[in-house]
Length: 314
Ligand code: SF4
Ligand code: SF4
Ligand code: SF4
Image (cartoon, rainbow, N blue to C red):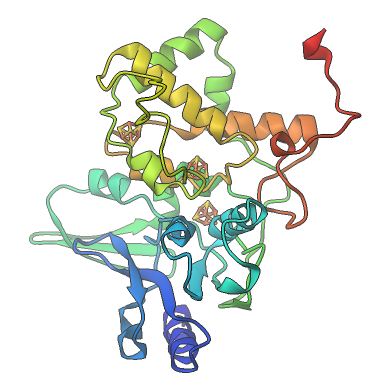
């Protein structure tokens, strides 16, 4: 079982002092939830869990432990972020031990909650089924009906980089699929798309959970907090909200690994990945580049070549 293997490997790594810290997933305080755990003591490895709710991208925590050797649990998308961050020189090459887990696709706890009446007190998994229990009910759900949108179309579930792989390699989609919701969005006209964007961003409360959850958002001072120069006001005016979302998406161009962590963290359930997914597709089409897949290939927007096409300057 993957969970047991994870615990065993974490124990070995900590006991042998190959790493100072293991970052993985632990039981959350509520059913259907897991929390990141930071383990320094081999006696605490039993806090590690692996299930269908391990939704966070743990590479986002690497920025906080610059001087430690870290054992990091990575799914496919997390490992792509590690590759992208390593190209941006965010850590030393020998600082990480990547414990890779081929991903079974993650379940959206909010969709499960909406599918049942009453408070969920316990959830377990049996094959492809989720067994959801409350005070007066017990129901079986097919986990495939409750996957996150980004997981439904993910083409890199196997870690692209790992020092050790836990479990069997899973079959990958061969083509970059577009999520049906996203297809609907792309088929809209420009004005309709803008209306949708205005409506979605209009619900934003500027909590910045999306920024905090994203491994690629690591500037010590974000433009939204900068007062000199001041880029935007602190309120919730439509222009400020739209400005934040447009700049955030553009900062991810050629850097986003489609992990969906931003969208999963949003308390307002705003579809943040529409813009980043479209930009990912554009970068793939224009430059044949997918973030974090090739450890040698830097993002096209962070490199320069004298042969670059420059029609836009004419
Ligand atoms: S985006 Fe892919 S690798 Fe990441 S959690 Fe979803 S299925 Fe797994
Ligand atoms: S923008 Fe969202 S989907 Fe892209 S890397 Fe950041 S958290 Fe993941
Ligand atoms: S997490 Fe959601 S509500 Fe919070 S700033 Fe991001 S989009 Fe807005």
